[in-house]
Each structure stands twice: as C-alpha cells, then as structure tokens.
Image (cartoon, rainbow, N blue to C red; front, side, top):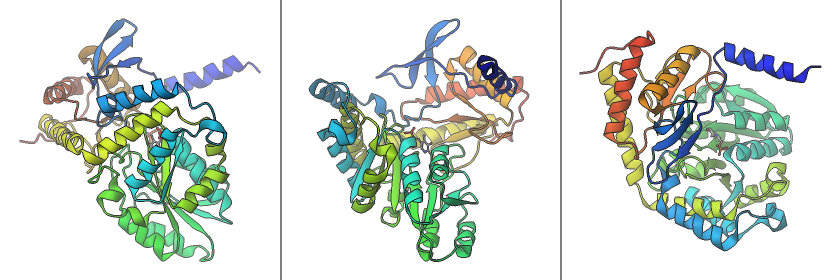
Length: 406
Ligand SMILES: *Cc1c(COP(=O)(O)O)cnc(C)c1O
C-alpha cells in the first residue's frame, strides 16, 4: 500500500469539506495577555487572542510564575519518574491536598491532563465495577466517551441535560447493576449548564454513582472558584468531580476529587495513572499557587463576567446573533464551515483578531461557529474593536443580522 498517498487523500477530503485544522503559530506574551505575537506567512505581528481557555489570565499571574520559577530552581525540570517510581514530589502531594480541599472531598488524584483523567477514571471504574452500566450525556467530551468505550462496559446515552430521559434509562435497567452517570457542568461549545441537582436526584433514586466534568467551570464559578457544584452547594452529592489545571487554572494537568477509597482505587488500578511520568514539580507548584489564589480572590471572576456582559451587549447593538447561555462562553453562530473559516482568516489578516473557527467534528455540521471567551484581560476597547470588525465582515460573508437592540 502507498501509505503516503493514503494520508494525503484523507487530508484532501478534510480540506475539501472545510474541516482541515490550521494551527495559528503564536507566542503569548506574559504580562500582556490577551496580546500575542502571531507568526504568519507574511511575517510576525501582534494579535488579540479571543479564544483562549486561560479564561482568567492565570497563566500570567506573577504569583503563579514565581511559584513555578522557585520550584524549577529548587527541584529541577522534570519529576523524574512515574508517581510510583520516584515521581511523587512534595509539590504533587501539596497540590492534591489543595484540590481535595477545593472540592470538599477527602482526596484528589493528579493526571497528566484533563483528557487522561476522564479517560483513565471512567475507563477504570466502568471496566472494574462488575457489569457496570454507564449513562452518558449526549454532549459529553471526547475524553469521557473514549474512556467509556475503552472500558467495554455497556453504555447508554441520555438526551443532553435531560434528567427525565436519564430517569427513563435508569428505570428500565436491572436494579442490581452498578450504574455510573457521567456528565459535565458547563458544556464548552454551547456554554449551557447542566441541571446538576436534578441529575443527582435521579441518580440517587437509582443508587447510581455520579461523575461530573467541571473542566470549564473550575476557577470560574462559586465563592472559592471550585465550579458550578460549589456555587450550587452540591459538591457533596457528586461521587467524582473531575477538572483540569490547563484552563482557568492557567497551567496544565488534570485531576479527580472523590472519597479516599475511590481515589486509592483509581491510583491502584488505573493504567493511565500508573504507567506515565508525573507532571513536573514546577507545574504542580504553579497550579497549587494558582488555586490558592483563586480560592481567595474573586476579582478576576467578577471582571470576566463584566466583559462577557459587555460583549453580549455590543453584539446585540450590532445585530450579530449569539447563542444565549448563562456561562462565560459566547458562541457566534455561522452555520457554514467555509464561511466560518473565511471569517476567522479575515479577522486575523485584516483586524489582528485571532479566534479559531469551530467546525465539525468538534460541533455538529451546520452549527459551525466562532467561540469567544472574553477575559478580565480584555478591555472595553478590545471588545469594541472586535465587534466593529465582525460588523464589517458580516455583510461581506452574506450573513444574516438579527434585529438590533436599542
Ligand atoms: C478540555 C477538556 C477536557 C480535557 O482537559 P485537558 O486538561 O485539556 O486535557 C476534558 N473535558 C472537557 C469538557 C474539556 O473541554
């Protein structure tokens, strides 16, 4: 077989469908977020980033940087091993304590990423619980789906954010079977939020475990920034809370928080935890410092909410349709892969605005969008410039307006 030819053909198909992924070559500038240097074909220049998941700018928080620099000088570059073989440094232990406290759980366990924490934990629980049945929200992230599939346990998909549909599936299952309900709090593409209390009500009625991915909510919601479950006083009702250190926390890594026994179980049986090098101590130190900060300060969260409200108001005034939700994610719907890509290109080339077009398979075909994540680092002037640019390009892409707000 001509392998190279095969790869090329498959890539051509993607390009033809407008779904080929082009990466923007960026240098983020600490101290100047959301500004970054973009290295393009025609040279390098400053752009404003509008699609970062470093939602609060913690990636440039001087306290986080100082903690990382200190740990780097003290402990060196890498962890030097898996957690089991010399890779558990004191920084890992402290970070896990910080995480358990954040979510009001007995224990926490670190992974190399949020993706791996979902894949490994769901994969291990569903595989090891005898004859486990997994109930999975229709919009769950790829990492959860892959973990569930990998377990080879039976799984059923309930309608997105629909406790009644979940109840229907639980009611028809054998009452004796162990059951696991997996869902997210903030869904990152539509920005909608799960009815966590109702899902817990249903799960509890049928004796099911609950697994909540709070990846887009940690750092962002609740008095100490621990997420939607904290905000709604529900942390104690969830069996497992999963999060990332790579988004609002500003660094990298993933984790679960749960009972001491569940955490020890995953620590002891999960291949995706055991057989991989621990994250560097400097990363652990930076994440712990970031979380300590987020527990005590809400001004970043407040500033972030204010910028979201301001962006939505400006979009309304310009008659640019955006999807309503109660989170920090502002999706502007385009509904066409080609136009979505072209808008993204033009924003970058003509206006120095970087927002990555979101196309299939990340979202269903026909719902292609630009997904804006305003941060406390964006100014009103940044938002004004963005909406002016969008308004300018909107007509050129023959996109429909909605009635303009007063
Ligand atoms: C980004 C994301 C993850 C993966 O987290 P990483 O730390 O980036 O690997 C998991 N779940 C959801 C819903 C995500 O959006």
